[in-house]
Image (cartoon, rainbow, N blue to C red):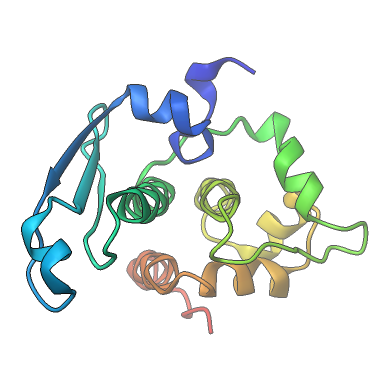
Length: 172
């Protein structure tokens, strides 16, 4: 697949970071001398979209970088639409995480989660926020799709806000 058509949340770390500005800084709060003297805080901004992720709660810059990158991917999944061609859904990644019985298997802390969430949200938004139709296209059950969205509270809030604007019942 053309790299330009791959959702930013699904790109390889190296490719995604080529499009980002990474900055470091000190963070306040508890954590000892290392945290207060060394620039362990990390902010990663995806320049084409303006989405960012930040972390500073860990003592290690490397750990904060990993967390900030994951948070960036989640923000990209939440706010970037139109990257998936509905004629080519579900993706290979989605198929690798969805059983023949329609059960999704992805931990919300796993590095694949933002890409899976992005695909689910793209399909859901393209199909007018109808989880039953989106689930059919994705090959999973509507309850599995809703569970995936509920695993990220910001995703559930976004979907419910959009559904409310269309006078639809909130997902629970």
